[in-house]
Image (cartoon, rainbow, N blue to C red; front, top):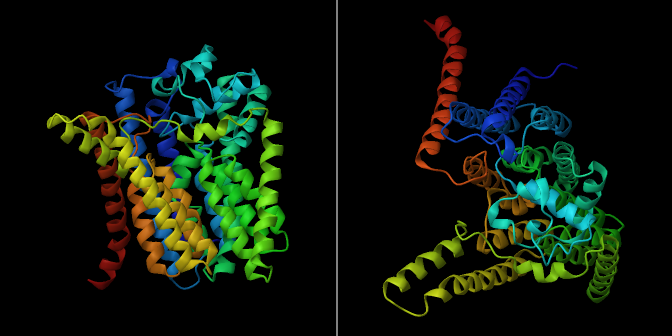
Length: 464
């Protein structure tokens, strides 16, 4: 059956966006060290303009698709999944974009494969070509990830024999599997929460942040969120123990997913299981899964100590910004308390996150999926480090359980802005790069405006 014209236009516009930004990433992305170009080179400048041109086209396609969902005969979940595949296709063979974290993943996997303690040592201990790709800031920092992800990375390292191109493609396929699990879980979670499955897919899976940072950036947050969503779906049915196992596996990729265990318990209670029994069953499944996964990975329990891995000194998280501002003020006053400013704000942020999570669950406990989404958003907002893709922790489940269209639209506005917040190289921006990035985005807006005017011209002619 032929697709509606408006849906085809959205698909083509989004495809053009991801294709252009993938092409621009060939000179401006997070390239291997041997392929890096000087930011001032003509090729890198043109690539940066192209990336932001493509990102704006993708955001526009996503926004137009959101409008289609509000009209008569909106596209269903199957059509949206096809659209996601179309938009993601050009990114599969693109270089890493918006972050160099994927190189750290590969180096850490090679360390585990080489039986180097990945929690006690940074990639510098591995040495060689893979370690050279890791940003200097993280060369001597232990891995902040759990044994499940490190086991995946180690298996990929063994499979690809440490070859960089094969490793990058393999890690992107792992992330793509995580996105597929997210997309599979969203409709079921939305139906359970009384939300529109198509709207949930639009916000939670077709979101530009998913395509830019989980697919193009190959971040392991995709695996965490995919396992978390799958675990919640299992807990909705007759498999609460399986749900606890899957959520625990998600937490053993990245720690924030551990909050999902509260949702597993609440979902069991809502089906009539006694609270104590639900809590004990979940705790037992969690403990058994943790022991088994850690033993299989062979990494030991160093991941517990790695939870306080230091953050970038220039991180723009709220508590880090306030900490640096307070430290500068105290240094100007000659106070000996200046070195304590950043740790104090981080501690205050952690306290605020705990309080926020407690309040959310007290007020929204009967709506565990939505409560979990808001809780993960609070953890990201008050944490010591923030990156645009961290917004997906909460957004994924808020998309599935948002109580109204207005909530989805406010969240969509924030994430649309965040999609523009990171350079394709993953590095800090200087004034020249900002000018180029803005130029690419403005050029895309001009092209979109002209296309819109051209589309309206025949209608004006008929009414003249």
